[in-house]
Amino acid sequence: TMEIQIAPSILSADFCNLERDLDRISNADLVHVDVMDHHFVPNLTIGEPVVKRICEVTDLPVDVHLMIDDPDRWAPEFAKLGAKSVTFHMGATHAPVRLARQLHDMGVEACFAVRPAEPVEPIFDILEEFDTILIMTVEPGFGGQKFLGNQMDKVRRLRDEITRRGLSTKIQVDGGVSAKTAPIVAAAGANVLVAGSAVYGAEDPAQAIDDIREAAAA
Ligand code: DX5
Ligand code: ZN
Image (tube, rainbow, N blue to C red):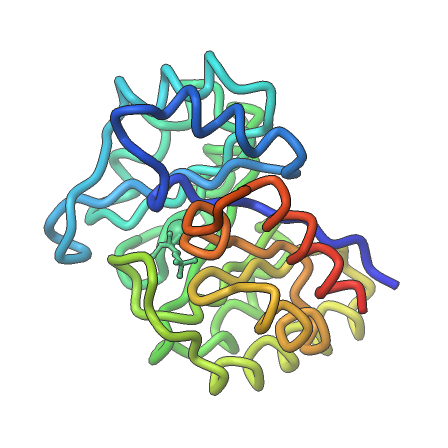
């Protein structure tokens, strides 16, 4: 069976206690950092100075999810800060291949994201350019939304294509992932599970991570 990675989203952490809340998820595989700009999505979070400090204080690899306009301009700025991977959206980029190659030249993994109404098939033509494809399972912008099970067909189609071509591309899902939905996304073929409210809404975030990991493996 496929190795599953759990990536807690700090969007649901306490932004006044980020270091404490990063320490609470040391059993995670990655830390997922949501960057929003009030333009691509109707919410505003953090920018380069805070992402830089997160990269400095955590021992976990940092996965930066850019929900911003003009990632072609800004993604390299985030890649400089020490992130392991940078995600940008189909609906925001003009030159995804050029941007992925630029990130790789900087030693950073490239992840391409699609929103629920966007098809995954156009990415098939450029699949080799990416380390990870993110299938959003909510409309991006907020934590705590309801999981969109109708995105699982897309995950299966992508998994079939990756398998057929013998690629090692990871499939990330983000939105409404919990111990309850983890078995569904894992069965569809996702292997990087982002979870915000299910981790930080729990009394014991580390336990919630173990619960999601266990549910995904079951
Ligand atoms: C939403 C963000 C997610 C968010 C997920 O736009 O990209 O990473 O934190 O939150 P939950 O897990 O609560 O749906
Ligand atoms: Zn996210």
